[in-house]
Image (cartoon, rainbow, N blue to C red; front, side, top):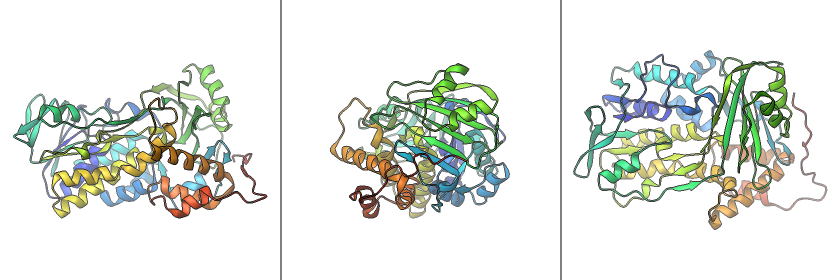
Length: 427
């Protein structure tokens, strides 16, 4: 059984079915294979991207998915060539990095996955089902309570950022540890615009950077050719929802493309805002006891600040861990630890800079990471090699190694021009 029919839940259902199980997906919204919108996805109106590692794992889970994404208008392209990335010191080099990326709206991606999952006769879905508690038999989970009781040999909880799995564990006599929370006070404000003028990029990104840069933004081209403009605020900054206020906020960013897209395109639909976008890691893997018959993945385990675009990729990696663990016959307690192991690198990257704005004390390891990331930002505009190395880490393809640290921390040579592409124009 899978509780939650979103991205992570669909990936988990695919894995369980391929393992030979009959799978029931419990979803609070009424959905079919062709459903496009779910009320349970408040972030559906905001930009989404699949990083290189996520694309690789998804293609392994859903062979041919890449062709389907291309067919709906979300082609694969090299991250370094189609994403314009602005840091405080200037523009990152526009060079190929060998890392594919796809931008696709969340509803379209989920519909493609749902079609594939529900085409399997071993998978059924029950919409309109709100899970209220786990069904316990001693220290074992044997199903879910909701409008009715549903029995299962294995329950995978993929109920997203607002999961109640911690409460459910307490009902069963298990005490989860206190979660790690890092809150930069991030707020998203997004509006869709017609394409306007032609560009040779897929996305433009300018992120807030602690402590001095509290505003940023993201422009993403959708599969239908429109552009989603997201204005990001951190540490108390919030973009207005009025047309004039939205445009003026965009004009205050370093990258001119934000205001340009707004000015050259026509608004499509209304403004959407999301707040409370902190990063939260439940640390379930640290529990001294873990119930048999239960696994958790996706945002129910670790919800990351979505400005870093890592959430779907991490969930896909966790689904691959689930697939491998089931094939090996690993016990649930060990498999839950392995699922948590897929989180660490993304957590470090997502929270590294955000911690500067968080009011709580920062561990020394995190303070060291903040310094490294700040140095990376300083060096990126003038160092294509550093950009390639860091991109591989950010896409969760490589772990940060000595080579990246050396490039980031080595002394600056005489004559080296920081911000070498500071004023590099956008095409």
